[in-house]
Amino acid sequence: MKVPADPQWERRVRESFAQQSFMRLIGAEIAALAPGRCTLSLPFRADLCQQNGFLHAGVTSAIADSAAGYAAFSLMPAGAAVLTVEFKINLMAPAAGERFLARGLVIRAGRALTTTECDVVAIADGEEKMVARMLATMMGLQGSPEKTKA
Image 1: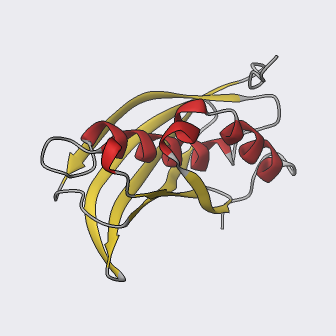
Image 2: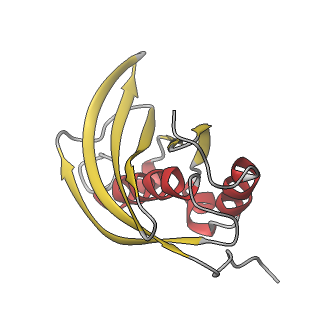
């Protein structure tokens, strides 16, 4: 198990996630959280779909990016902020299901850059199907605490 640099990591991650207006807009929530891991859950919504009724790739990418980012953020020191530097996503199957889980995992946490991966699965009739895999690099901005709403 990875060891967080900040003993208040969980509070900091949850407070930061609560500031994500886009995640709130689409209905994504933190389903599980551990040092170096973050799982987001998103219920199916027809208004988040593309023309064939599958979850839009932009939404799939957004939940994967946030899950990977918060997995990385969980290991960063107090007073840091997290930003995505780059990501690559493979969309492996149509995103059709009742619920979607994005499971972010830190592969390597560095001083400035953290490498993460995230699998997105669709759940239908109690069965999981992998729909996407992301590989991402996150940057920890030291001395740049998360902004909060005024």
